[in-house]
Length: 152
Image (cartoon, rainbow, N blue to C red; front, side, top):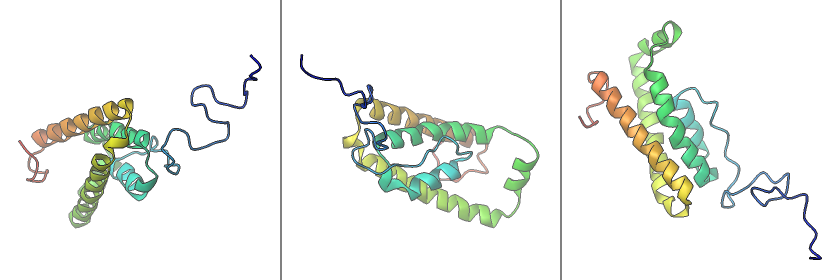
């Protein structure tokens, strides 16, 4: 009963205020990905910060990817469509870079699953499943534009 409460501690995390690194297994602070507008933008951000990605950041990444995939499939007209139609060679290079980044992030995810808690594991699994679903739906809608590597 002589124990004094520590009012500087955050109730939810147990960490002192001002400590940026909470519940991330001692990893650095990964950048916020919620403002990303495209899959290539979020993949580049995550890829360039993989070593700072804690399980919760990885789970957040795989939650955002299917949303961005779905948004990119909705026609917005004007600028968006024009940007995708010019310079097919450059688009091919960008697709290869995106594929490389996503493969690296996926491998990093699989290699680090043992450090995930139940919530991060469930969130990541659901995000991966939704990503695969979104890719398969896009392939069914546009088979000629997609790579032949995707399953039917």
